[in-house]
Amino acid sequence: MAETNEYREQRLASMRALAGMGYEPYGGKYDHEDLKAVRDGFEEGRTVRVAGRLLTIRRMGKMNFCTMNDGTGRFQLIFKRDELSETAFAAFKLLNLGDIIGAEGTLFTTQKGEKSLIVKEWTMLAKALEQPPEKFHGLADQEECYRRRYVDLMTNDESRERFFTRSRLLMEIRKHLWSKGFVEVETPILQDQAGGAAAKPFYTRFNALDKECVMRIAPELYLKRLLVGGMNKVFEMGKDFRNEGIDRTHNPEFTVCEIYEAYGDRTSMEAIMEGLLPHLCDTVIGKRVIEYGEAKTPIDFNPPYRRVAYRDLVKELMGEDWFGLDFAVQLERAKAKGRETATNLELDGVKDELALTHEVYDKLIEKKLMQPTFVTRIPHEFVPLAKTCKDDPSLVDVFEFVVAGRELCPGYTEQNDPIAQREALEHQAGEDTEKIDEDFISALECGMPPTGGLGFGVDRLVMFLTGCDSIRDVVLFPQLKRV
Image 1 (tube, rainbow, N blue to C red):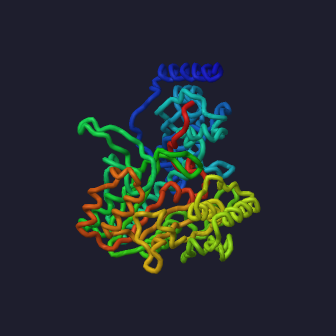
Image 2 (image 1 turned 90 degrees about the vertical axis):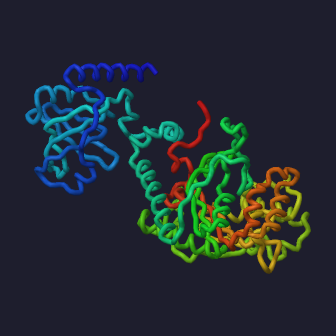
Image 3 (image 1 turned 135 degrees about the vertical axis):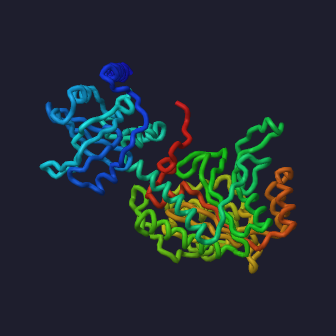
């Protein structure tokens, strides 16, 4: 801390000295060109104005070199004694790493072929009072990158570019859906009761209306109301909030995109994903095979994607006779399989065949589905808002879309029968019948067309397409413990 204070005092002294020479430490508007545009359109001898942060300073007497970064790229500035006024050259000596300046001069190529700007005059735009980390080599502590994202972005070109990529992905998602006839809408974040998913909400109070409310866990039930009203193709991209755990793929505040199409079904939603993902790869990423995670596992987003039934995946691993076995036999087989794969199967609390089977799927099967896969025909107990399969009412006509061993999104043939929907919600709510959204049921009773729907986590999608295996690397300000 003493060292940090010493640096700060030195910078404060430099700031005061600059002000005394006419260089106000915090300037105003400065018209300039982006450094990327300057580099791309480089023309020897052209006069340009640039602005950005100083990453390096090399003082060499009468000729000094700096590297500037403006967020679009880096460029070399040359401060020569005979090209600057006496005051400007003297003031240059007071600049520190991290300072933001504006500079005007002529473009020049050095003998080593380095495109540069010979500075004729410069102005102070923002004095940095804090010493940059390790001369802009970046933050070594990953958690510090999350806590002080502004420093991470300042020093890490890869991190900054990842968030530019995220922004471009969001734009292209919207463009693609609009091109398919979908309309973007907004639904309430503050809701009277949580619905559309089984998750623990955040609670708050609406003082003006004198009522308790929750932050939404999903926009689904409101989007379906719009289908009832005749908006046949809608999507929403926005925040959901779930007061649950935090890990490498979960953040309590996260961005989702939910899509609903009247007169569609599960297969309509599969078609959307098989169109959207290649589009994003082509327009933003530039390739359809992504190297994912530390292992650099190649993920191929070229359609068509694999389609396989949930029960078939279980039988592939656990044996064709699995669903005909007694629970005790299933339990022993699952424990043996768990040991064989060195996977920690948490089976002690499992009491029935359904829960055990899903534990096997969750711990031993899903994690190994690396390539894009639609897992279909899921047990109806897990998805109360979907229609059952016509040939087997114990299953629902949905998919879980799995990529790199993690679920990216579910897709449904949505339930539009209000009587069946009420029964499913009552079963899910148990004794807490007040949790049933009666207005949603009332909307269904007005008549909702046959519908296909899906919802994917935007953060997780960005993870897959940028090759990251932690959600914190694609969320600018993730939730963290206090320090």
